[in-house]
Length: 114
Length: 111
Image (cartoon, rainbow over all chains, first blue to last red; front, side, top):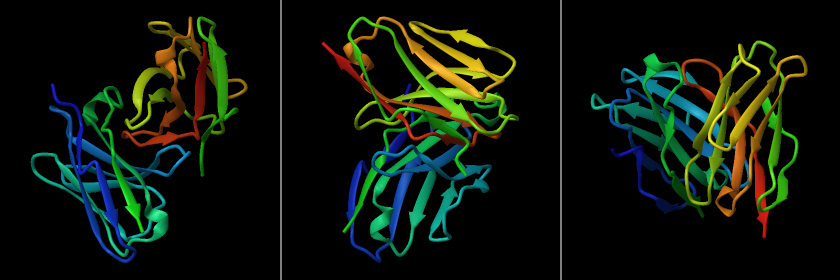
């Protein structure tokens, strides 16, 4: 049973560029949430997608945007990259009707902005 | 702002001893807490959860205690093993699967 898969695992981008990260949820899950984890910190909630719409958003600028596809997979886009965007980006999936049970994280994409 | 936080950034424990990791929260209306373990290069892994209608919950070698009076929860790991080395986060599910994490405690196992 495949869990949450994220791609790529590592990425290096230049300041000002744009990046797209991808996430495939665990089989049977319909909700995808994205988190940013800076070095030495806890994950910070970016936003969540359900039924192809953004449902909740954390305190992140509009440079961070996303999308959810009919097959429940999701993308995170970051425009005009800053050095401070360097972090581990985590995707988590869940089945909304379970009220939080079974919430599963992927291993993340390590983004380095130079 | 952050609603959950851990007391200590690092904890060192002798192998075989019990580990206790503490966490405080600020919102008295919070009702669902989760402990996660994060190993190097991996995403957070669910350990155990507890809802506010409970004071204690036990799993395999782990126990979570919730004290609503002082807004404090703890994770106890029995007979700590080398494989328990990781960063531990307490987190709150604020509803609709929005999880808010604290800063984490790194657990070191001493031989």
